[in-house]
Length: 88
Image (tube, rainbow, N blue to C red):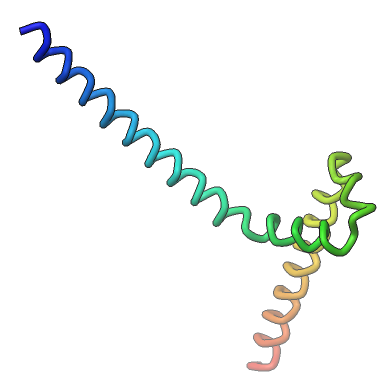
């Protein structure tokens, strides 16, 4: 009886581990999707600006990304505004 319950507990913990592992992989996948822009930007930055890349930990790259995103946002808002104005 003891051996049987032991093996059941083992298989349970194994499936739990598998589920946790799959969940973690899912979280990582989602993180990579959510941060695809930042990751791509980082790779570009590292390849093209190796000197500045070493200063990344100062948070400058976060400002760069925020700046670029704000430019993109401003541009898209501007484009939308022009689209709506041309309709009038």
